[in-house]
Image (cartoon, rainbow, N blue to C red; front, side):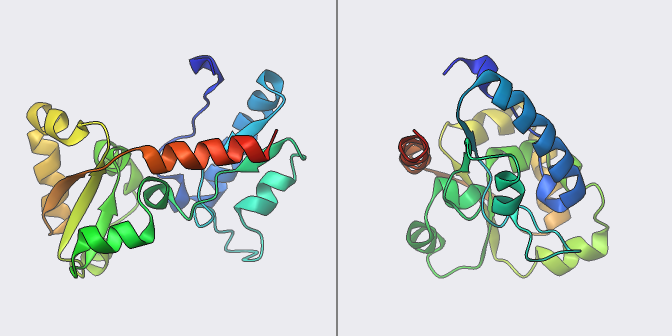
Length: 181
């Protein structure tokens, strides 16, 4: 697939359901002009309509017609590493899971959070683990060590990388491509 056919929404939109819906609708319309089939790479828990809790990401997508489907995963972390593998990686510790985008865009994603909400959320975990399938953490830390430290300080837990394979994501995308043909 040509790169120009990959369309993105802003990072961290699960924190703002209205913005997610607006951007997703816009990108779906563009995608339908480019391709006969569209695969949405959002998890089942990434969109919550607080005014209508029964309206989920799948209902939002179905409103745009049958040519659209969604990757079958719970969230971005689940797309990279399944529950059993996460449990093995955590090794009994309480973990806040991160992907490279979360580290790169943390100030944007959590822009509406105050220190109180951060203190309620993060310190209940022993650490944050960044699932890294491309060697992102090492390179990013060399260039932006101050950002990594600032995020870790704000969360009040350490951040450590964990190398992963991208096989799970690859397989989920292939499975969805087969199901939508």
